[in-house]
Amino acid sequence: MVSASKLIKATYYAGKDFFRPPLVDIGRTGATSAVMVPIRSLSPSHGERITRHLLALSVSDRYLRFGYTAGDEQIRRYVASLNFERDDIFGIYNRRLELIAMAHLAFSLEPDFTSCAEFGVSVLSHARGRGYGARLFDRAVMHARNEGVHMVFIHALSENTNMLNIARQAGATVERDGAETDAYLRLPPADLDSRMTEMVEERVAQTDYKLKVQAHQFWGFLHFMQEVRRGIREARDSTNP
Image (cartoon, rainbow, N blue to C red; front, side, top):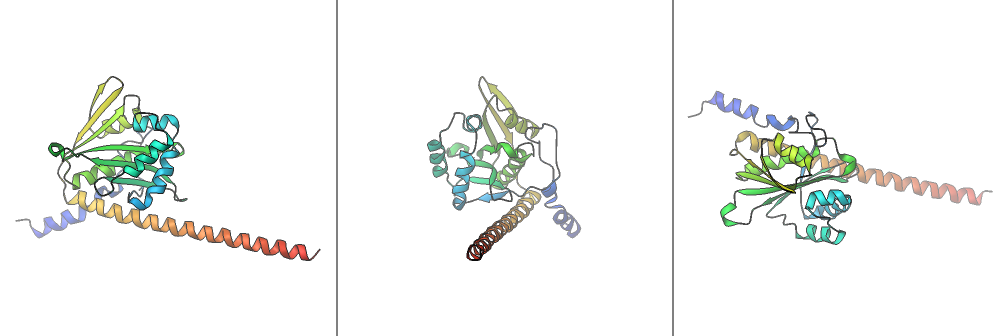
C-alpha cells in the first residue's frame, strides 16, 4: 500500500516535465530552450489552416515531408483524408493565428500492430531554428504513451537530417536503407507524470489559442474603426474645401 507521504510527493512532481527543454532544436543540433511552447490538439475546424500551412511549404519542404513533391491538389486531398477521430494532429500557432508548425501522429490500422504509431512533422521556413519540430515530437510521444502505444515510427528520406536528428536525440534506433531511413522509438508505459503533463499542456495550449483569437479579433475591430474614422475625416474634408 502506498503511504500518504509518497502519494503527495508523486502528485507534487506530476507534470514536472511541462517546462522541460525540447529533445533537440530543429536546425540547430545541440541547442535547447526552456521557453514553454503552447501546442494544442487540432480538430476538423482547423482544416482550413492546416491546408494553408501545408500549401505554404516550399517544393523542397513538401518533398521532405511527404517523400515526393506533393502538388496543391494532392495536399488538399491529404487534408481531406485526415481522420481526426483515429489519429491526432498537433499544431503551434503564432500571434497572427498562422499555423507555423504541425505534426501528424497516425495510429496503425494493422490488427497486429495496434500499439504502433507513425510521426510526421512540418515547420514553415520562417519559424525554423526554434525547436518546434522537437517540441511537437516530444508532445506526440507523450500522447502516444498515454494512449498505450509501445513504439513510434518515423519514415523519412535519408536527406531529411533535421527529422532524423530529432529521432536520434530522443534515443530512437535509426536504420538507413538507401534514399530512405526508418527510425523507431520504444516507449515506456504511461504513468502519473505523463498523464498530468499532457493534461496541463493541453489546458495551457487551449487557453493560449483563445487569447490569440481574442487579440486577433480585437486588432481586426480596431483596424475597422480606424478605416471608418479615416472615411469620415476624408468625407468631412471634401465638403469643407
